[in-house]
Amino acid sequence: MQEKRMNRMNVCTLCPRNCTVDRGNGEKGICGQSAELKVARAALHFWEEPCISGTAGSGTVFFSGCSLHCVFCQNEPIANGTVGKMITVERLAEIFLELEQQGAHNINLVTPGHFIPQIKEALLLAKEKGLALPIVYNTSSYESVESLKYLDGLVDIYLPDFKYMSSELSAKYSHAPDYSVRAKAAIAEMVRQTGMPVFDEKGEEGLIKRGTIVRHLTLPGCMEDSKEILNYLHTTYGDQIYISIMNQFTPLENVVAFPELNRKITEEEYDELIDYAIELGIEQGFIQEGETAEESFIPDFDCKGC
Image (cartoon, rainbow, N blue to C red):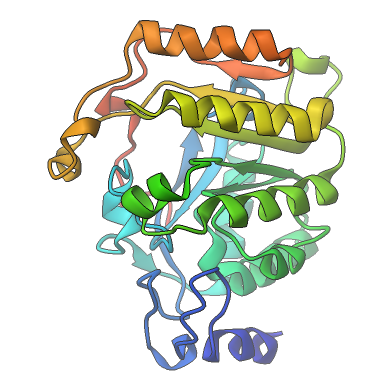
């Protein structure tokens, strides 16, 4: 297994950037990481969708590094790889089991794409030792379909973003003009793997056990793009997925060079998007209420649980 992992690391094409760097020998690609696992936090997390966080929390592992690097990133300290702790595959498997012992409803892998081979090894090790929780793959959707197929049968719940439809916006804010093409293909593969959403005995009021929930974070001034995304998702997938429409955009210091993003979404803007979703006929979804655009909702990346 380790030999197969290093083969994928030595000429890395795990994400659409296709850096082809030799991560196995310490080189770093756009993700900012070598082949050595780096984790910034592993703890119970209560700020996901209700069917994922539940009452006990989601066992969330935040991986350091990211291949997308959005200019408005709320997790910038880990996205740029400046924080985190190096761990082994064996330690990651232990972390999964520790989160299960703490009462987590699931194991939630955040920004995991650049560590897929190592994560697969850790999941197999943990399952051999009794891990029985659903596995959540929490991603920007800037993913390679080939890499996602490597996890087929191991991931129960996909939690992808759909950030932009416009290539102009994705180029400006995430340096990825091909984002929507990649996201569409990635989400199609996720839905193929998970099938129709499945909940526990409480039905839709309970915990999700299998399925895909696509998130969309509304950006200031990008209403028409948001509407295109909702229309695409509903037209393409109907009741095969849930759609989470988020208003929690938080302008941090890293958006000073983009003054159009230096504000929160207004209540009127969010209401307009929700009304549009209702007009489309979207029924399987989540919306946010109250004040969610606050830095207090961003966890401390202090290597807790690592």
